[in-house]
Image (cartoon, rainbow over all chains, first blue to last red; front, side):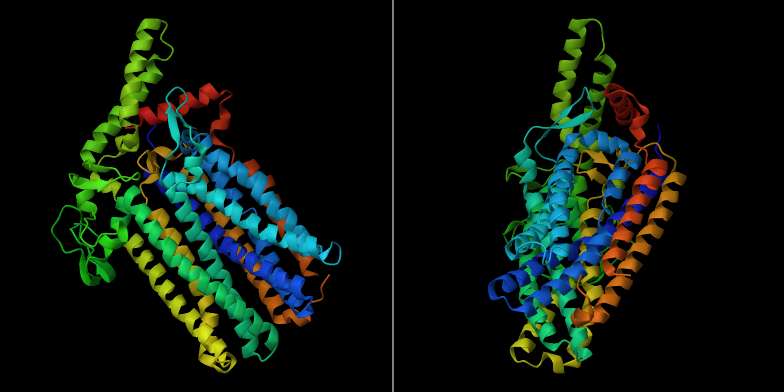
Length: 524
Length: 52
């Protein structure tokens, strides 16, 4: 079956839409849950009703976000089965296991204790309520862990063995999947971005109250804790961002090259702070990749390898191969060229084809001989299986401008938030924050910016790994189902309407509750 | 309307749309048309090996 690019593109666009909308709802839940648990712990210890008031107000904002966001991720799982059936079958239980654990354990834990947290005031003991709040927050973050385990496996497939009889990958090492370097860096970076979102949202809403000259004590207390929480998150983001870069260097060098717009590496590769990419640049011409750039000498080599003079391959180097690199286990190897990878991918596909052809061969001796030979070819070449579907080097290159600029948007906004939070902390220390109208303006402006920052990070992660649904093993074109692209477009429109309605509902209800404020809400 | 009731309403309407409309009419798993695991495997392997 020849799968058209329009079907693949429609399926990709639909997945991108649903995933990006989903990520509008998720990050606030991750961070705000922890902040609320901290507030309630203060109430539990002090018995001070103002802490309870604080806890209940932010719980309400959490509840609105939770109600609008819950189950939006399920649609992604529907899409796997309908639009990405080859992929869903090929990944086997690798994807199923973490998602099942997420659904059964983490999500239900979060949902159950959320009900106690929201409705249980004065109905359960203070201690049990506090426990429920912490378990809600932990459940939300555990939920993220299992989802990100599945995502990380797609970026760095480890701990599996391919079964040619079933065409599926089978899990052979659960722990190497759960604790792979990609899982750990992806989880810590994503969760910290959720913490930052929550900190900024709390600061912004509190600053709005200060602007309106109401709920002063409530707001200053919220800002104080959210600022410390935000500073912790932003410095953790810097650290986890670094470990993510190290992981990407070893597991997805093409993504790193796209993030940097790097075509030719060198010993002591510079880091591009900002640049305008040259649209005429291709992997096989001599055009300068940048029309304009501000670079920091040798910094990319240091970030990627911890060595100022190390070699970082560019897009053209990766296609041509021949350079030395260290794999995910730190073993030094010589890189294969694109064509060598294609050849090995084709050998793996032919071996799988032999399996399909001879698995029911009645002559046992002939069957065993062919299948054992095919197994050798498959095992030797399976790590490049996906290259067997690619026709030209261009197909192995992600969208460089989108990856490059999204990365810079994320990093620059990250820099802005470091400055913003340090200034916030300083103004709080000097007790002058509420008098600084310019800061209050920036605080409110920061809400859309922090969401753009979080989304940009995911654009880098997901666009940068194209064309792979599973790194090196399965490209987009081989992953999609045989459904008609018109079906995909129909559901795309339904999702766009549904999610936009949910977002508008969330914003409308949230704004309404914020306007009422902690004093204007009748607690039920 | 109390915000709690509004949120419950949103959750119920959303779940109804997701499970009763989208799942039933638009998102039938592609491989569900095959009865056995062997048939599903054969279909996917054919896609993986025959695709140019």
